[in-house]
Each structure stands twice: as structure tokens, then as C-alpha cells.
Amino acid sequence: MQAHKANGNLTEDRTVVMRRYTPSDNREVLRIFQEGMMEMVADTAFRGLLYHPESQLLYAAVTVSIYVLTGSIWLACCILPLVLGARYHYSRKVVNRYLERAQDMHDIDQYYMESSVHCLWVAEIGGSVVGMVAAHCLQDGSIELLRMSVDQRFRCQRVGVALGQQVLKFARLCARSSSSTTTSVVLGTTAYMAAPHRLYLALGFRCVGITEGFSTPGIERSLLERAFYRVRHHHYKVDLK
Image (tube, rainbow, N blue to C red; front, top):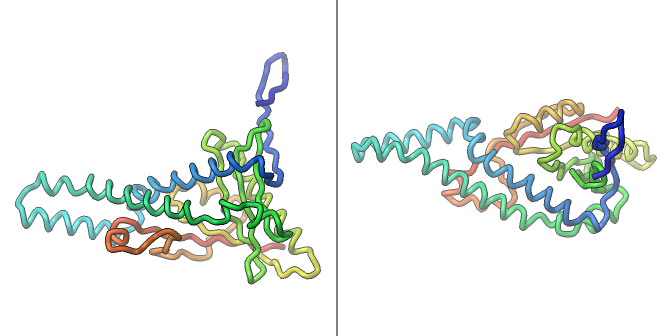
């Protein structure tokens, strides 16, 4: 990592530099993307449970039923760790299938770099790739922000802000095109962590809807998956001026 002298001391250069993706970035981009997606496993399994009262009622009903049928408090108390384990297992299973089916990340050049209305950028600090974000033009003309992810070691250093601003800048350039119908930027997230939502609001997005029981790509909707995997999808939008 680059460094420079300031006041006689060596200090790291923490400037965030945005640039277009190149094939040499592929390894780091996939690592950041996969690590970011795997964070969603625990987020969905544990934090997500707090936001789904219907799941809480189901698990509580099962616990009470087991106690009534067996009369064993010990057996009933074992339900909670079993439930959390099952939620983690199915969350991980869905996320792994999602990673396998994310075709755009398996051929970034074809999906993002061979068109003037799609693109993928990386953020660098000191010459190291620390984040990524993509823009995709939808059929209605709006630009979708997607694949935003920041290396865990470089969080809280305004990398996410730089990534989001890059997509907004790209969308405004598209909107100025004489043939463009671009009027807004949209994104969707299933994150329960507060940090991503704070970032989107800080960038000027507003939440325009929530889909309960969202069918994540990669879910098979089996009985067990419906019982132990459930997410809500937040829809965000910012209008371009």
C-alpha cells in the first residue's frame, strides 16, 4: 500500500479512487462480492428473525406443542438452538445457490463492459481494490445500482459513498443523452443491517416499498425453506434532477 511523508511521519494514503473494471481485477472483485454475500447468511438467519413476527409465532407454537406433548422443559428449550441452526443452514444454502447462478459475475465483461448503458467500477485505496459497484439500464430507462460491496477491512472509510456517487454520476450522464429516458436510479436490498440503509438514505435514495417474503434467486421454496428462510426486500429510488 502506498504511503507518503507528512510532518516527518509515514502515513497511509486513504484516498478512494474510482475506475472502470478491468479483467485483472476479476479475482479481487469476486472475492469481495462473495464475502459480502456470505455476510448475508448470518444477517438473514439471526438479525432477520427479529423482523418477522410470523416466524417467531411459528417457532413459539412448535415449542409449546412439544412441551405439551412431552412434558419436557429441557426438550422444549432445545428448540431455539435447533431453529437458529436450521435458519443458518438454509440461509447459507440459498446464498450459495445464488452465487452459483449470478451469471453476470461469471462474465463481467459481457454483462457490464461491452455496453455504454451498463458498467462496473472498482474502488481503490493505495492501489488495492477495496470495493465494487455496477450499473444496469432497465427496460423502463431507469438505472439500477447493484453489486455494491466493500471489503470488510475498509468499511467506514467512505468507500460506499464513493461507489454510490459513481453510479449517480453515470446515471446523470445517461440522462443528458438526447435519446435517453433515464429519470431515476433504483436499487433493492434484503439486508437487515442498518448501515446499508443509512448509506442509501445519505446518497439521496428514499424507500419506496417493501416486499415481504421475497423470493431470492436461488431459493427452491421447499417446505423447510419456507419455514426457515424468509426475507424482506427494500426498494429504493432517487429521482434525477
